Image 1 (tube, rainbow, N blue to C red):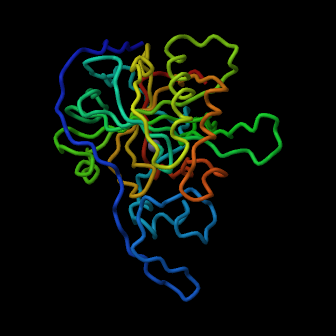
Image 2 (cartoon, rainbow, N blue to C red):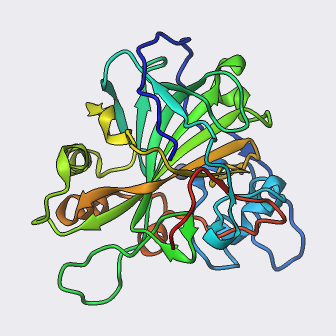
Length: 321
Ligand SMILES: [Zn+2]
């Protein structure tokens, strides 16, 4: 079994932080019955599955970007029986000066997003990519609120990728950009511009012992989310990067896109096999977050699965299931 090298201490390039917003698009009338929107801002996309809603997930290709209908879109279902296995593939190596990083956690209207200070976290050994990738942010995807009368009103499973059709409770994405492009805004327009390190999230009863590493993550969610319940609310907070260490380092990888508009086909996905564990009570704090529009509370913030269109998902381990 291939073992990850230990993270090393290294200073990386600095670059400016900027939010992915402010891109304007023009809606064109295609028939008299269509609703017409003009100069709508891409940040108002949402996950409504009503086919008549121009902002909803099924209309992203014609509302925000034709690339959302491209041949290499994400997320996908990972079939473990169809993986291409390379047990000697390099493990992405995270580099940082300090394991505890300070950043800004914001409710961006679609998720809780932690913005790294430039250079606090980077990675190399991204599969099929060269050079250093700089962490811009991490954010979480999750399911909608059950509309039933379940006693604890827990949210439904909402990972973006699935494994053999199984959807985890959530999924965390560390979005990184290729240092050669200097900024995430520039990098997303290049085929080798982005890499996302993804971690499935699995909730479990509070009473179970799930170790220090996962406890960090539960405390992070449970203690910070109540402060960013409203859209655009933010706080300065810290995170221990040990949360993301994986030993052994086992992952799936494939070439795809961002899972929100503009759906840029610029992403090498690295999805770790071992999920983050989170306590049930900490995970329930996700429910506090206000969304852009009313729909996402019902549907969650995961994009519908996209076809592989001949792409092959690789792994660096032999699946046992
Ligand atoms: Zn994401």
